[in-house]
Image (cartoon, rainbow, N blue to C red; front, side, top):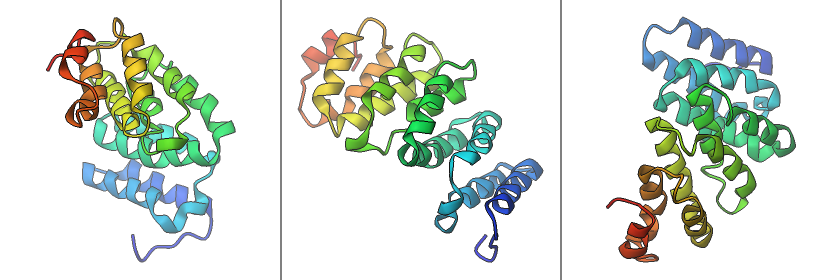
Amino acid sequence: MQAHEFATAAEWERAIRAVWDGARFREERYVAVGIARAKRFRDYRTPHVLPLYEKLVVEGAWWDFVDEVSIHLVGELVANYPATLKPVMRRWAKRDDIWLRRSAILCQLKAKATTDVNLLEAAIAPSMAEREFFLRKGIGWALREYSKTDPAWVVDYVTKHRDRLSPLSKREGLKVLLKQGLIDAVPAASLGADH
């Protein structure tokens, strides 16, 4: 990867697609994602590549690919082009594909204080009652990460939705706060978080 340069965004995208589509082993697909994430191609990562990212999420269809693409690539687009990307994430959150839904939930994982809580809520809501492990875990992970920035918001959110959130989502969402002693196990247990 170090020796390759691409003169245009189209060349870069074609290379990612060629490596991804031609892969016989998972590790080759990791290379495709690595090319997509390489810092020197940052200028190529504009909203026009969203169909490529959607392809990687849907065809990757497992947490290792989906999380990498969602958190780093889709998340970068959401941060840099919010007016374009936020409506797309709201649509992805409602799609039948669980991996696109997980991607919408996790796309702000690194946003910290710039997290759009309205988008986070909109991404979680369609999957809140789902039994799918990767959606429940993704919800918990998104809440847990945001709890490091705004613990009160997360406690309020989990409390407000305690009857709809899965025990896994609540447990994961409150994990840091419990560990840091910011909330105690008794109120957390009353939310239905199993410890």
